[in-house]
Length: 333
Image 1 (cartoon, helix red, strand yellow):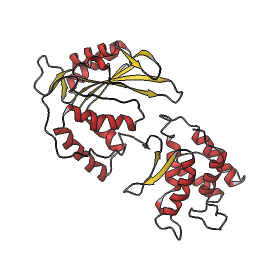
Image 2 (image 1 turned 180 degrees about the vertical axis):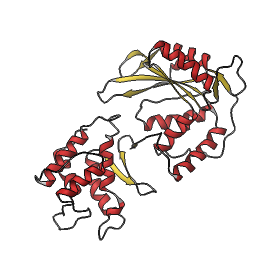
Image 3 (image 1 turned 135 degrees about the vertical axis):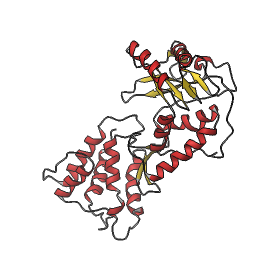
Image 4 (image 1 turned 180 degrees about the horizontal axis):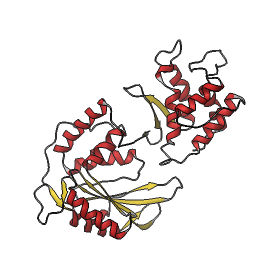
């Protein structure tokens, strides 16, 4: 991320807590040692060298913004930590107990770079990319969850127990992958049953180097097992594995490039459990191939990712009736 020098200078003044021309400030004043402490709290090993405070901070912010990022619409984790430390509710100043005035000052700067900061219900500040409405998160799906997140996860489990495969895709997977930075997402669902190998359904991902890679998803709502005869609500992992291989060999047309391309990687996504036997079977297959073209994720992976990224729960939480439809759905991105 490359910011204009003007915006870096103004953000540096906020970090330093320097008063505005009218003598008013809504940010905590930080001397040399407290600037070092501030960046330590952000897990950054910057030590102030005694130079002009705002100039030194601007250089450090520029350095942080140059860190690698997941996608062009998600800033580096270190920068998110800096903004959260800057807008800590405990640093409220006289005349601004809710930090709304401080938030306004910060958003004037962020808006010039296409961002907006806001507080959630837990008074934690987040960054939203204005063009795509993507909320930047420091998402670790394996960290301990808060009590609020656990309640949301339980509600999402109840929804998954009753939703159809189309609802799993449209209400859960598509918002999740959009939040994670994928784009050009389209899904027609089961209405058009001629969509073999994702001819008309595809999504893609742009690397920080601006190279584009294509992924495919084979979605099954129920459990994936390895039994010879699958029970109702389950699918055989070997069958799904073969379908994914067929999908990887099928060309799709990218209208932005005006040419046909192949899928680079594929996900096998299960709305239910992937049994231990099925994991062992596909693990042996993937290990023998020594490639990472095919990956898989089950219900627990979906639940954890959806919860920690802070996505809103599906609007329809009235437990839709489950579908007996067993047609395959493939999403390419």
